[in-house]
Image (cartoon, rainbow, N blue to C red; front, side, top):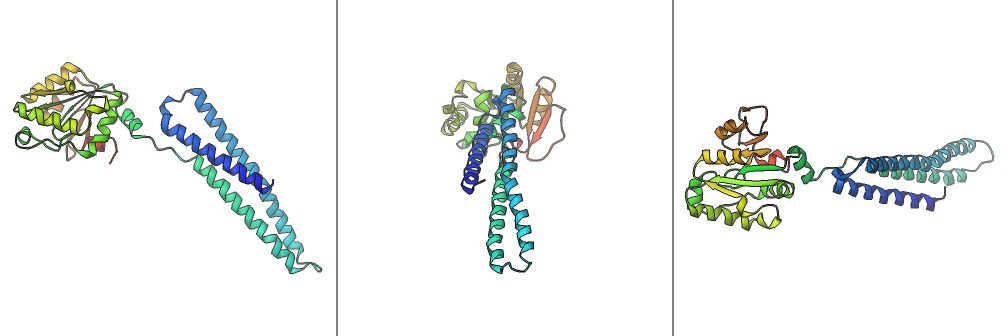
Length: 270
């Protein structure tokens, strides 16, 4: 096979590899059976093409060995050896490049954060989540009375991914109307309402911890996220899945309760 043809073939394999990688990373969950079969067939075709590309190089190396052996006989000059060796070196380089292309194609595709979120939530479609200590830096209602609320920067990306495919409700116990305004202002400044997945009507406020528990039971979500162990324990019988956010690993309340130091840690985003 001519060297220019090999170069063109290697370039074609690289382009196909990039296109297939883009396909997997952007729409892995949308592939049907026929699409997966087509991708698998293409992978096999690339592999055998590489084998065909590699075969002439093997023959060249064998021919080189015969030529080198014959050069030891009388009448063959040392100059002939100097001509043969670079050919073998070139073919080895081509083999290495082809192998790198094939290895690159078969590398596992890293799932996107959106795919991880959907997988971890087991395709749940409704999520309820408390604000203090999970979405907000503040951890008590008293803190909201004396200073502006602050959304955790590390949780923002995960929160926006959840709103893309889940019906999300945020809730918290507050002590006055001013605290409500501070919380809503912080969420708005963080851009949570502009993503299209969350509206202010889905941010709920109550005056007691039992009030938050009542909100969750009325909404009947697939998942509830909370940092209060008592609320987690109360809801374990009624909610399909729960995430208990705590800085240390607490004793698991039930089989359907998961634990993590933060919401973003649960989805592996940090």
